[in-house]
Length: 192
Image 1 (cartoon, rainbow, N blue to C red):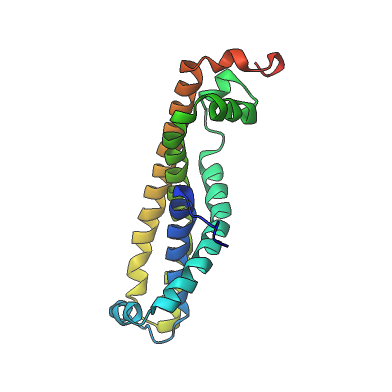
Image 2: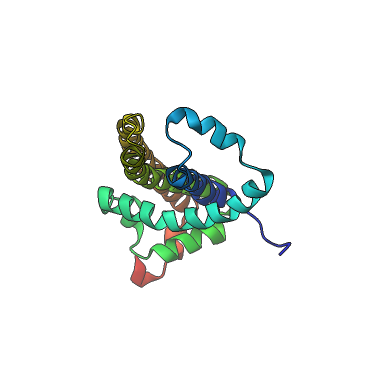
C-alpha cells in the first residue's frame, strides 16, 4: 500500500476531471441545494474525512471518464493526420524506440499527453455537466441552473479544441525526437 503513487498524468488526467464530476453529481443529488448561492454552504460542510475518501472515488470516476473523453475526442477529430504516420504505421514500435533512446525527452511528451487527457476529459465532463444542470433545473424548478447550460457548452468546445492542440504538440514533439535521434534506422524493415 505504501507503493501507491500518483503521477502527473493521474492527477491531471483522472483526479481533476473525476473530482469535478463527483462534485457535480453530489450537487445534483443533494436536495438541500436549490440555487447557486447554496453551493457555498455545500462546500463548507465537506470534512477532511469526506475529502480523503472522495479522492479515491474521484480517481475511479476520472479513470472511467477517460473512456468517454477519448471516445469523444476520436469522434470529433477522427483520424488526425499525424506526422508519425509518415515514419511508420507501427505506433507501439515508434513509442518503444522513443522510450528506449529518448529518455530525456519523455517528460515533455508525458506533459503533452497528460494535458491532452485533462482537456478531453474536461470536455466529456462539460457534456455531463450540461445534462446535470438541466436535471437540477428541472428538479428544483429554478432557472438559475439553466443559465449554466451555455457556460458548459462553451467549455465543451474550448476543452475539445485544447485537446486537439495538445495532441498536435505531442505528435510534433514526438516526431521531432524520433527524427533527431535517427530512430527511423532502428525500425524493423517491414514497419518502414
